[in-house]
Amino acid sequence: MTPADHLWKNARLASMRADLGGLGIVEDGIIAARDGHILYAGPVSDAPSLNPVTVTDCQGRWITPGLIDCHTHLVHAGDRAHEFELRLNGASYEDIARAGGGILSTMRATRTADAAELIRQTMPRLDALLAEGVTTVEVKSGYGLSLNDELKMLRAARALADARPVAVATTFLGAHAIPPEFADDHDAYIDLVCRKMIPAVAEQGLADAVDGFCEGIGFSLAQVRRVFHAAKSHGLAIKLHAEQLSNLQGAALAASLGALSADHLEHVDEGAVRAMAQAGTVAVMLPGAFYFTRDTKLPPIDLFRRHGVVMALATDCNPGTAPLTSLLLAMNMGATLFRLSVEECLLGVTRHAAQALGRLDCVGTLEAGKACDLAIWDIERPAELVYRMGFNPLHARIFRGQ
Image 1 (spheres, one colour):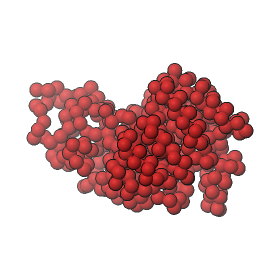
Image 2 (tube, one colour):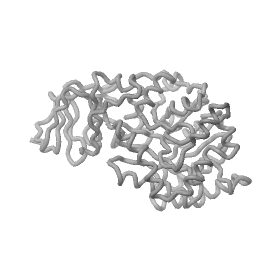
Image 3 (cartoon, one colour):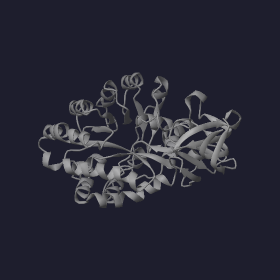
């Protein structure tokens, strides 16, 4: 008999395995774990002879992989509730940013806070995600906009995994906005990002990827290209905020350089979609930002489907345009606002989200060898996870088998 630490029996599995099609449904399923990894996940009829230390009877509940929030700005200080009021009175995101608000408002609060304070303010946001079955979360920097403050943010993000049972992927987003000290010389700031910040981040092992904000109120295509080349020269993966407010061809650039993902994409064109498909660059949908900013330009979901671009789904949790800490609600928004199917939403927060982080080899599906990160649900069918609003049917969250 094969020894196992734990066995979950009498479960229905939405394994998300590609080889099983759809959501990878397994009726009468079991999962066995050893040393924090899945030993077996599948129908009881095909299971090896197992000798578990402990057994949990799931009583017919559904098990999915632990959910993955693959795009967040979770670490920051302060909030921007006042800017929300301004938008309700007619100000646009661009108006607020150009008046010194927006990202720079959060930058000032974040620079003032030390790492311990950043962690303290972040913890409630993280706990809200974990309470809905999230076991992996991506966290970006980008509110420090100086070498020391960006490093501080990334250290705070890494520390979250020490404070809670969660896997944290960190992304350096130094090219998020122009800090006031470089207001008259944007290229000089890009020099700092490329020549000082990225080497320091890489040397200290603080980031898994590098991101940028390619927009008229952010950075030009040429500037982002420089950032990406610097990232790749230091062995870091790349991602991009692209085509949220306009089409600067950021997604096409990201795809040409083998980016893990391009995110937002409301204004992306078919040529860039084709490039993403060829490169395997994931399209990350962020309906919370679309909803919160009252946007009207939908991302071209049918183009992504037609060209076979993998779509992930995330909260984009941030203080200015998506103060959202519910991945379940993000799925509902993805379905109602973007017309994603139930299957697309659920794959978007599991298998496809793992792909967007370059972690599909270890999380995102229920199969042998992967981390035993599970979400066990009190539901009758998986569609309930997308259908309900403001309701959390999580029964248990398992991280690394515990």
